[in-house]
Length: 154
Image (cartoon, rainbow, N blue to C red; front, side, top):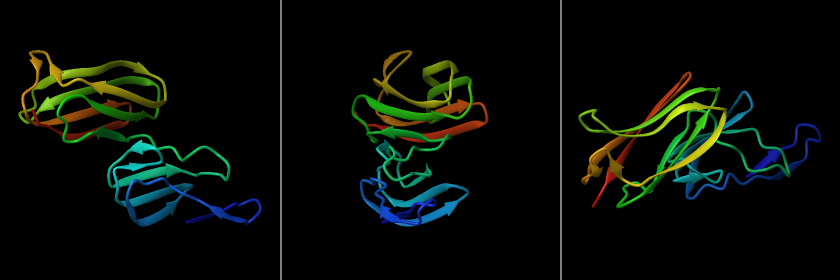
């Protein structure tokens, strides 16, 4: 893939570093939207759809835009990594819920500044190690709410 430098009009190589195939790209207001069959893009966990900020030649890899929530591995047998991006300073909450909506664990519940964060969940809830099943990871921040499914296989 190529990118155009808007200052020089030179075409340079651009690699979004997707782990598998990208089927579609769209550009809107300085962002590149990628859709396809991938688990990682831009060095972050983000299955199937991602939005990346504009990347300049020689700059660091694109960053995933606010609102992103990624959980891997999924399914998991033990611990999993959760990545999320906060757009504005404010209260952030990251919860794990069972399929009935019962709170199993609160992984974050405090004010955070804008940025990318990574947590590890060890598969424990208030009653110890959770059983096999389907769970939901819910991320809430100012102006953002995202939910991802997580399968736990013991």
